Length: 210
Image (spheres, one colour):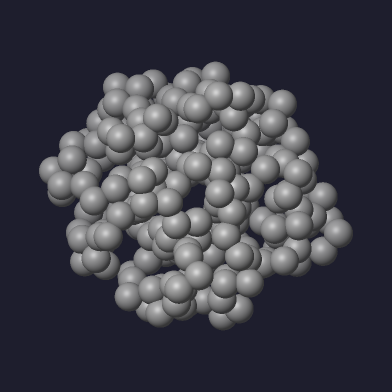
């Protein structure tokens, strides 16, 4: 069985980036969406990425950005992957010469597989609970039965994951990766090293159990 990858999203501080990497995170998410309580500047992003070890992917999160906003961020921060959380089309996501993943807001009436097929160039899909006001990071789960069995690209499970439920989430959905933000925080935008450690331990325990 493959190892489940882990992305810690909404990193706002250098010390939180270090804690995430030290405990084994595969990717860190930096939010470049001004309305988010976890939004950071290009300068903050540069400082955070400066302490991140090699082979850890830095992901930049955007919500319906202007193309110049993405380009200026890429010029200032060494992002390895783009993450789009709005209503961007496949072509809008794919215009920057950087691999991208697309978030799908899952609700009861959403055909997840159909949404995925609208993004043939996506490297993967973040499946998150529909939260129109915040576009994620609200600690809300969705019905995991809506995760497709045969997705066209990698599934990254998000939405209300915590150290307490991540093992069950992995066992139920078998995602390529899991993505957590509020579930490892002591307050909005401030990560807890202890919760990060517990989350990674939950992922590892689930993988070992198969």
